[in-house]
Image (cartoon, rainbow, N blue to C red; front, side, top):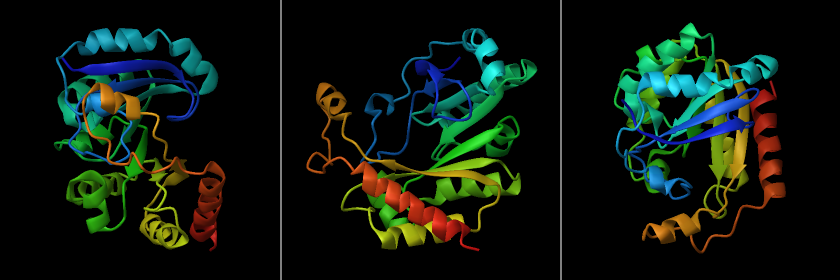
Length: 237
């Protein structure tokens, strides 16, 4: 069994087409900008693999019409590797497209998982080791290990980066981000996501400190311009 924190149907941004997004509980990172603090801890197992698959395949007709599928997110889905693997095996029998939204900080079994996954949506927290530790509370070693396995298997990838005012909302960081991304293979899409603090009420209800309380939401127009710059740097050749 596994812990499913929540399920979103008809998702439109976490992979191609219409998606069922499954949020698996548990995460080892403590990102300053996290908007799902209720998923830090794994929680009690509440689904068998069969129960979850049956819930997902109810939307199979919509997947077929729009080239959609299921996306496993979190939290960090890689922390429930055994449950994820067994669920994906059943989904493969149903010919359902599987995406994995991850920071790459799990507990191993990466190659086995990735052989079952069609798309990796990889969340970059920071490109410098010290900045990564500042943003997440952990060193980047495990994330880089996962990324290396993705490259070994030549997995299709989307790259995402949250842009936070006064931290990484500048051209210097975007240039370093482009240098990080350029050597990666099979990148289909790159997105910069504007930071927002809509989750602050969650932190208050959980009696948890919100470390970016004094940081304003990221200006969406500026974020779009930084994304344009990133794409220019990536595709200038």
